[in-house]
Image (cartoon, rainbow over the protein chains, first blue to last red):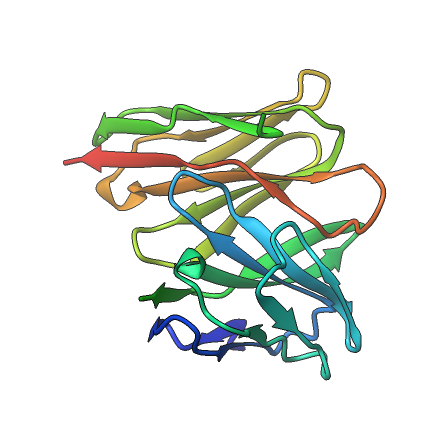
Length: 114
Length: 112
């Protein structure tokens, strides 16, 4: 049981390049989300999905796209990278346990845009 | 103003000390989570609380719903406890019940 797998772990991009951060979970969790973590700030929600085929915007969605074609995968696309998108990105999946929601996080992707 | 406030922001302790990290929030919640993040590492869920107290090994988490406050205690602290501890709440307000609001974290350093 691998949990939540994020790839790559590290990435350097040039301004204007595009790329996809991968996130996969093997726990059959219905809810998945992407967060960014910046120094001095709490994690902020970028996009989330409550099930295959359903996605919605979070707090800081600009410059990012997502899709959820399967329960397992929730990739995050940077359309045209900007230095302001330098951050650590975490993917999380969520499950319901007796009416409460538990969360499992990936190990993070450290992205630098130069 | 952040809906979730943690204190202190930084905490340095000697091995063996009892440690308390506090979390206050301003909205009604259905659950509160304590998370741990080691330097350069991923995020691990420690506790999910909706009332009372939970214990796991040397870690104890408490919550007072009426006062909108939670504490994370570490007994007999060890250098391997050095990490950022993050408080996150799941608000009761309308919309998706999955969303979390995070505090900025408390950086704990335990010296040998």
